[in-house]
Length: 197
Image 1 (tube, one colour):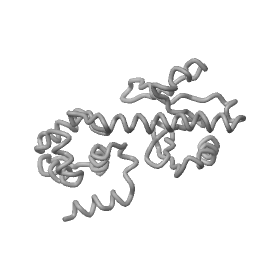
Image 2 (image 1 turned 180 degrees about the vertical axis):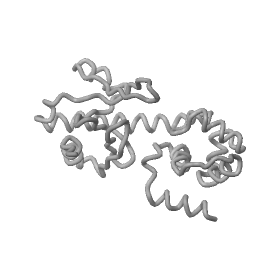
Image 3 (image 1 turned 120 degrees about the horizontal axis):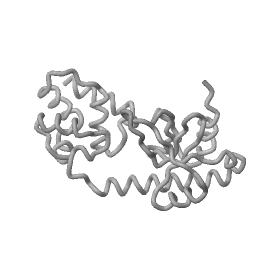
């Protein structure tokens, strides 16, 4: 299936740095280095909004992307751009740069405010928090000390069920403050080698 909006956006935003795409929210997230700032769904480009630019985007009639998670609608912070912006690359670049700046700022604010509960870390839910507590890991600090590999081993010892590798990547992402899908292949390989020890 052809995805012109994705290809065009990646080409246009290349001046920001290393642009990559990954499957996210039923579409493709666009990342500059490790920061997601745009989303392409159904060949429509959406840009990240934050406190600084969300009101402005709404005033221009832009609407956020909504997807379903377990049957419930989830409103994202990614707003669909008007198709006319494609005809004005300078404007689109300026808006995308704003979105990138917002995403970087949000990310640094999140990492500055360290959560006190495991379920508040990226990728982790209440069910994961309960699993970790059963394995003797009851705080973000304890998880940090164990590391993703150590925590995964502790979980394997404490639970009889088969654990997915996605959980290992999720633990790594929780520790490093990123979505599990952006854990680099090299780091994944290191974690797998750690499990074999």
